[in-house]
Amino acid sequence: MTFSRSRTAPATIAFAILFAPFASFAQDLSDADAREISSYALTDAALGKYIQATDNLDAMPDSAAACDDEGDADSLDAIVARITGTPGAEAAIESAGMSAREYVVFTMSILQNGMAAWALTQPEGTLPPGVSKENVDFYNSHQEAFAQLGSRESSDPCSDQDEGDYEEE
Image: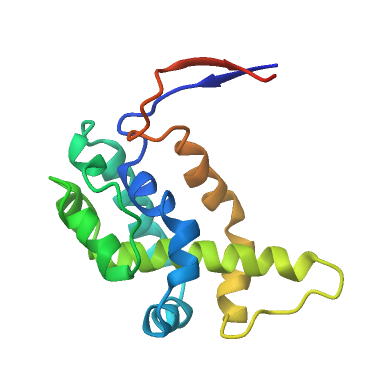
């Protein structure tokens, strides 16, 4: 089977900055960061700003600055610093009406609530502690928008691999 690997404009700098370190970040999340993410209320207005901010980031030219910090981000502050340290990224987000921090928290809230939505579909699934049922309902009612956002990120601009087709072995 052949998989096509295409690079989007900057392959959504935000996704590369935010999602790449998420696995280790989620394990190292401080109580304060976890509370901030859990208490964030997902809304249609914020989703509109988030989509616009992501579009703005997509329109940015590739930037090696997004790849300069190879270490994992271990806090919301560290992820925000990665964004603000990428030339033009903070302005791209702010021009959509969001701060870089809100963009990060919204992203993490999407991930948290998406995982919680999945957990609820499992046999005897229950809402994880600290997760808002309203946010899970928002996530479920906006799955198409989140799927479209996720499908934009098809490669990591920080990857050393070349573009091209990859064979499944």
